[in-house]
Length: 263
Figure (tube, helix red, strand yellow):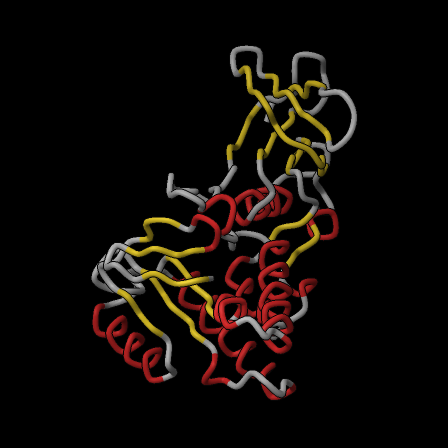
């Protein structure tokens, strides 16, 4: 690569430190000669989250630290900036960075790689933003585990049947890889935890999966999807296909098939 106009090594700006961003910077570091270019990675987190491990992390099967990869430790040849890229002026080849604290500033670049990844989509369902939990990062996985254990604690000492029902009902929306594995791991966690409770047994737990299409696990073949539904139903999990979530206002889950439940 040719030097920048000011004579300094050219800068390759990688926006996003997730799977794509981290491995882009890692491979660039292996291919570039020392001093040939500066690789700068900007992300509000100083680590990459390996999302396939989130269900195991949420269930407590592995520790949160085993689900993340520290960027500075892995990208020794790159510059890691903790913050958000809030704007890119490609005509000027300048990006605006908002650090975690302090005023925004600009970073000049010669090449830019946009690896921002995806964000959870909160559908315009009444009550969803207030009552539902996402499952995209390590914080949400840990929060799910803590919430499930808290619900079991509440149900253990509850005398009100409605409170008990609410805290023993867990609804998962979306039958893709993330939804199915998160639900299965969480059900394992809850079932295991009941052995330490006096007033809650595995039969008291209610797990429901809601999927708008006619099958789960669209990433695999239909036969595998059907087999998975059979296995989950044998475990007592209620799989509702071709069903949509209509509302979660005040924790009252309403489905398109007319089902209503507390969660």
